[in-house]
Image 1 (tube, rainbow, N blue to C red):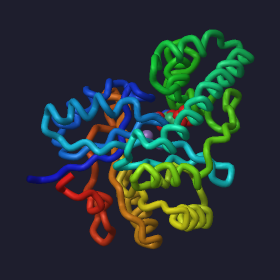
Image 2 (tube, rainbow, N blue to C red):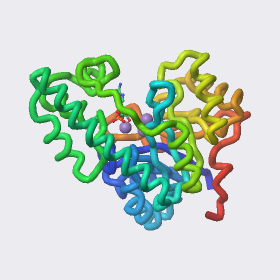
Image 3 (cartoon, rainbow, N blue to C red):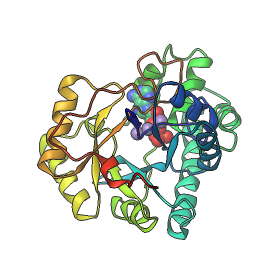
Length: 280
Ligand code: AMP
Ligand code: MN
Ligand code: MN
Ligand code: MN
């Protein structure tokens, strides 16, 4: 059977719009044969996703997307094929989740200083038991009419250097890779081109990432252009990292990103799926 992989997507366990079971069913309808659910700093959606995957006969890889500090930057590290119950990972996630909640409170305080009330209450209500992300604040700012789009919310309020940005000391890259490895997973640098790192810093980051035990880098992502894929492929090739593919799907209302809708991975790099035995 033709295999279709998507190793990066989100559910209501963090900033996705669909509950985990709906993400799985939608992926299945899109022809995905192996999906990794990778919510921000939480594994809370995985049990529901696993049950839905079993029901529709699709393979689910237990995943996560962790925020990591590296050289005063926040990098996103996707963990694939993790044991979600591993104590080191569980303990690490509790800390990240506390940081997320504290940061949300501070973002809301900063918005209040700009005359925007009620953000914390609104985002906690929408997020429910899920992790609060800046996307929740972006949606709130759109809903309240302060900005026209999510992108505007980031550009005017939420991005680094903007009035409601809160610098956060996420776990170090070393720790994050350590948790993923302890939990038996493989660590993948998500969307490498989204950090706006210079060539020199990107290569430094990937060298350090590999020394620390990182395994792969995303080469094909949901909105990647042909040039983006070529650049990311070169990074994987140069650093001899496994290549991952993931849509970073969040919301079915975004017409640009769909589960499983990904360009083919070019030849000449090792796909991450070669690490997952088909018998599992
Ligand atoms: P956080 O991890 O809480 O900082 O939130 C990061 C999430 O916000 C990302 O996973 C994206 O879903 C979203 N995001 C980050 N930057 C942007 C942007 N410039 N435009 C739209 N969404 C963004
Ligand atoms: Mn997100
Ligand atoms: Mn990300
Ligand atoms: Mn993501």
